[in-house]
Length: 113
Image 1 (cartoon, rainbow, N blue to C red):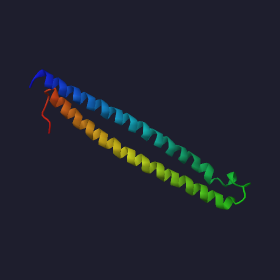
Image 2 (cartoon, one colour):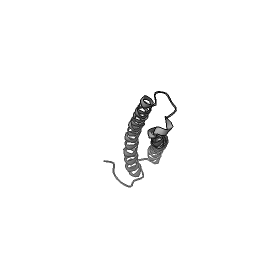
Image 3 (cartoon, rainbow, N blue to C red):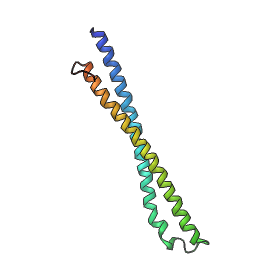
Image 4 (cartoon, rainbow, N blue to C red):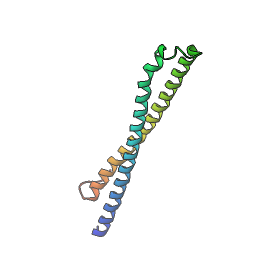
């Protein structure tokens, strides 16, 4: 195989690796934001369950369970989105692993599967 073909294959592999890294970084940032959102919801729960925080409000008996239900629904949505992002991250990691094997093969270190 000529040196120019090998160099071209290596450049393609490097570009693909850079793209996968950028995807991973974007997804990791998104996952971090979802984790922070989930943490904020969990931190609010004690205040929402404390009856003293509702005593002066009219309809407090109805408001407390409604607010708790709303927070739990938000928590469920955030965790669902986080799970979807984690699945995407897994796909990127699998692609990165394949790219490592392929890149190693381009460098002459092994055969692709």
